[in-house]
Length: 398
Ligand code: PLP
Image 1: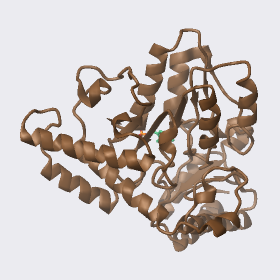
Image 2: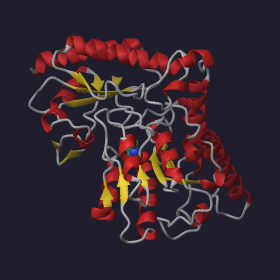
Image 3: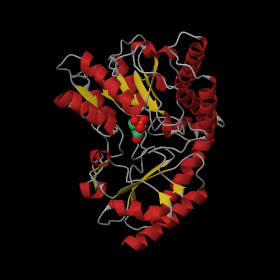
Image 4: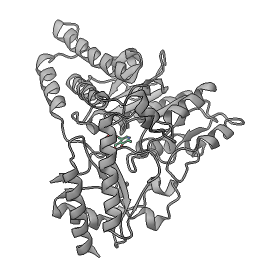
């Protein structure tokens, strides 16, 4: 089976599985227990925390282990809901993952405002700069890379802009981590991610907070994680997460371009692309070749965010019209490829993607999106095979 749904969840990676198994065997104690096995487990957990922090570029004691990105998002939003003045507005990008946008709307109601997004899918920082002259949100939520389209957000520039006014940035790095260089993400005030998107077992995530934050815990009933998250920590999960992230970072950084090569490849969007390693550039080329041939072979198809910098592993394509987008997914599944529609599915009936609607697509077009998301091991031959299957599926569906 061709697996093109890494953005939903990535298959367990060998390095993560090995690290998990060793940790599960060697550290059977509860990190909160006072005996030696407890202390050893606590030390392993803190080693993993230090590894993660050094990759992100932040202090280890600012990192809280959680069960995943959804819990992290809920924690930080609940923290703001209980600590901000009751009339303060908050700005949440309309392309955020539902765990951010739906939680924020529930907690902040009409105080939750949408900053403007460009047609490329990127946050409009010019608009934001303008608005900040007369308004002050309690925080701004801007993800690092979008899960549906792969569009990279200008999170560095956004962080710098907000820092001037000391407005916290909440950054969801779930799809960025393990695919793009992580260094610098630790400068975002609040940052979170999830291990299973990069090949760690499900059930481990983290939330990085500013130093000395008195975080309002979401989960109560235990003093774990310095009172910031109750519940016994998943030691082996944290160890596996740190191991696989380290592994991915090494892969990304293995052959960074020289300063001359970087100068020869200026990046209009400013974020991250300039620091891409050769291996990332190669992956971008493979994705672009697939897109070029997809447009050639399926008339009526279009690439979402085509002009924006995007994750090398993600293609969001508007497919030729059929009566229901799920039929593409079912047909491709039968032919041997796992892909996704990318948007939330409510009671079996597909709704147009809120991300594409925010980018200005009409609902009929937003409902035509399919998402193909690959992994590090995906080869050009896999992309070719996917293309063949898409063509076969279209012959059967039209
Ligand atoms: N944020 C983004 C960008 C995601 O893609 C996802 C998962 O799809 C999440 C958050 C939620 O992650 P988790 O499954 O760890 O709760």
